[in-house]
Amino acid sequence: MRAAAAAVGVAFAAGAASVAAGRLASDAALKATSGRPLPTEPRLTVHSTAAGRITLTRAFASQRPGTYGLTGAGAHAVVGSVVNGVPHAPDAIVRRLERVSNGTLEPGDKVWFTPNTHVGDPRTALGLDHTDVEVPGELGTLPAWFVPGARSTWVIAVHGLGGTREHPMNVMGFLHRHGFPVLDLAYRGDIGAPRPPDGLSHLGETEWRDVDAAIHHAVRFGAQKVVLHGWSTGATMALRAAVRSGLRDRVAGLVLDSPVLDWTATLRALAAARRTPGALLPLAVRAAQGRTGLGGAAPVEPARFPVPALIFHGPDDVVAPWDASRRLAAHHSGRVTLSAVRQAPHGAMWNADPAHYEETLRRFLTPLM
Image 1 (cartoon, rainbow, N blue to C red):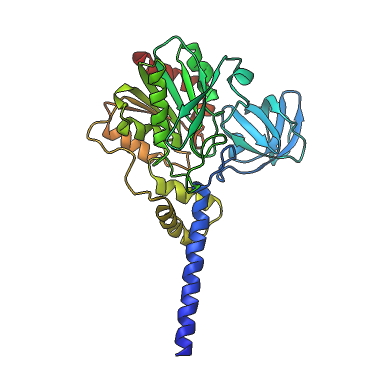
Image 2 (cartoon, one colour; image 1 turned 90 degrees about the vertical axis):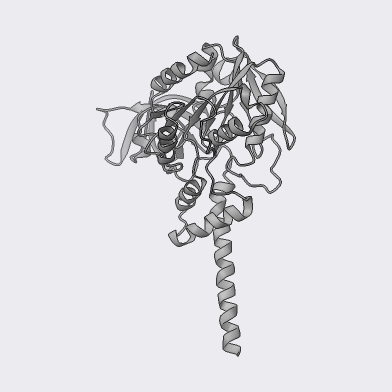
């Protein structure tokens, strides 16, 4: 009898430990910190800097084509393409150093690539006049930047996992040059925005209501139509708002960058990047579902896609596998255009080739102006 009780106790303890481990693993996605690189981004070492150049650890990440932010403790810089024909150690790579926005970069510093190429606000980063506005949201006031434009179609920009309002500034200059007013939103869980009641991200399932609030704000202040441009879970929020909003008839189009269309795959990827053992990944998914009420349904399953959409996504996104984007585009080929971007990580489709991204975006937006 005593042995049986002991066995039950051991089994109970093991089960409780597994549940706790599953909850901890699910934190990788449900408690992603705004402004912090996702765990899928490797830590790199600065080997040296010189005039217009920086030498970094050789890795797949440091050899990506394009333009990226580089962030470390108290520092932010922007790096361009790889520089060939320059002497360097076999374990290093040399890239163009476009600018150092904050702090300094010294040999030995640990840094990460980030999609954010700007820090500050639209005025300090881009020289664009803007207004700090307050959007009434479900949980309280949502801070946003508003950059005015001549057109009556506004673009509502929504960052994603690990991002901040600074991320959409990558395309803000482009949108301003083409006359679009831009509302760049901070939503629940962001710095300065209300905290969600449970302290967790719901990967767009509840956060879409903040995009809905932004649509109402835009219409209240003169927008005839809106285009929702979202990254990562921000893209998921935009898609849900286009289907569910009471003002969905005002949504003229969607631009979805690295959309999270399969939350279980994203949660597994982030948990695995935190070195969660494979056996615990199903527990992480169950824990996330139990903690947030997330279901298994895709963000949109209508017979007809709600509005024209442009998806930027590629096969190198290990956080939100692009197969879901390909299936969505194939199923709604008359309404959804998929622009395939290679050698770009999650949320960084613009960074891989800014000129191509912006030209594709221009062609999509032209009939929506």
